[in-house]
Each structure stands twice: as structure tokens, then as C-alpha cells.
Image 1: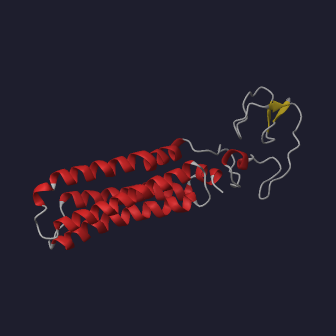
Image 2: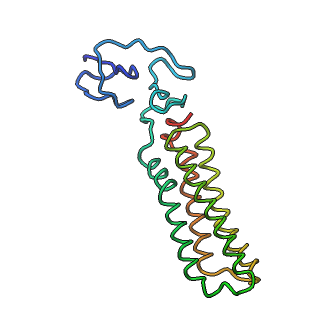
Image 3: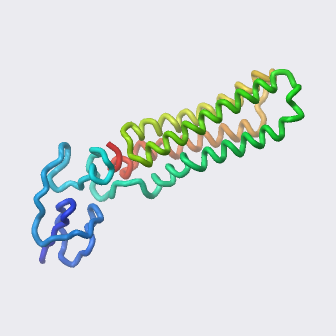
Amino acid sequence: MNTIYCSGCGNAMMSSMRLCPNCGSKALSPTPPSISPIQGQTPFAPPNSQVTGGNAPAVHGVVPGVRGWLLILCVSLVFLTPLIILGGLAREWNESQQLLDVPNFREALFFETAVYLFFGLYSVFVGVQLWSVKPHAVTNAKRFVIAQAIIAIALPAALAAMLGVSFIDVDGIRSAVHGLIYLAVWYPYLLKSKRVKATYP
């Protein structure tokens, strides 16, 4: 059986193959390439630093890069979350015009707006870091999903306390549930995903 080698990562494969199953490269050669070992990688490990800009550990069988579920998370952080926040705040202000004379309602509305605007900016910051494969991007993303769950639970309770009521409305309960679901989905993904481990230093 004839053997060919990937010029990108040095992976050996059958001569009938036209694409490296290890790194996805189409640059194939009949002789093994001369690749200098990168610290923490074997001589034929995929050169992840060339793809991601960092020194991410090699993960066999996973092509590093922002794609798949990781790309969905980035799009959600940079675009969807800020748009949802702005839409929700616009609706709140529109529906609240007749309630501004209620004691502490104006203060509660401004407090809610400030928290959500800051959180929207934080979402964009974390998403851009992930998309650009920056150092500590995954750590910041984990902090974001934890913070989202905390805000989703604590903010409705804080607003209820400011307004002097002892209950949280349906929107507050829905917000808390969404925050917990977001945490349950994305935190394990960031913790265990092979693509995340292959992409980030």
C-alpha cells in the first residue's frame, strides 16, 4: 500500500486520499515533510498556532477554528444577545410611560436599563474575543454565561424589592429559566468541547 504525507501536519495516509483527515489540508506529498516540533506538540501534530494565532494543544481528529457550534455562540454573543436586549428595553420603555409616576418605578427602570446595556456591551466584548481567538477568551466566555444566569435570577428580584412588591412576574420567571438553560447548554460546551480545546491557547 502506497503512503503519502500531509505537508501541513505530517500525517501519513493512503495514497488514494485527496484530503488530510487530520488537519484538512490538500497539500500532500509522497515524502514526509520536515516539521520542527512546537512546544507541547509532537513533530507531526497539526500546527494549531498557524490556524488560531495561539499555542492551543493538539486535539486529534479536530480541525481548529471558529466554526460549528462555536461560530453559533460567537454570532449569538456579538449580534443576537445585544439585539434581544435592545428590543426588550425598547418594549419596556414603551410600556412603562404610564407608570413613571409610581414610586421608585423610574429608578427601577433606569437601573434595569443600565444593567442590560452593560451586559450587552459585555456580550459583544466576549464574542469578539472568541471570534478573534484571543487569550483568555474561553475563560471570559465562561464568566459571561455564569453572569447571565446570575443576572437573570437576581435582577427581577432586585427590581421587585425596589418597587416594594413581594412577587416576581411571569417575565421575571421566564428570564430566570432562560438564563439557567443558557448556562446549562454553553458552560459544559466551553468546558468539554474538543473544538474549543483545539482552537484556543
